[in-house]
Length: 109
Image 1 (cartoon, helix red, strand yellow):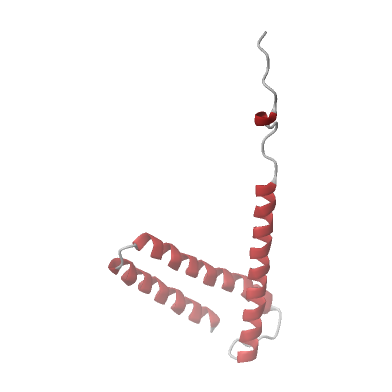
Image 2 (image 1 turned 180 degrees about the vertical axis):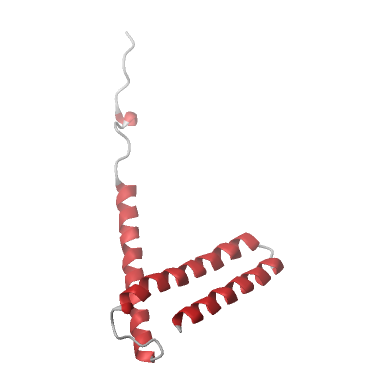
């Protein structure tokens, strides 16, 4: 059931992107936005399905859907936080071996 819904959703998204991209001035930006949405949906499916395959989760029940959604977005938020912290640490690092602007000028004699 989930596979059928995923195929329908992705095909609908592809058709929607095609028709919207033909009518918009900024085609490239919208294509990247829609590809990003499709990527998130695909990653959500590829991550959530193996996690839930060993459990008795019924995705036709609203409680199980909300629990799965909370778990996925919690994971996504944690991943985003880790990327931000790693980027901050990379930026704050000293990338220059020697700071050449603070060295006294050398005499050429």
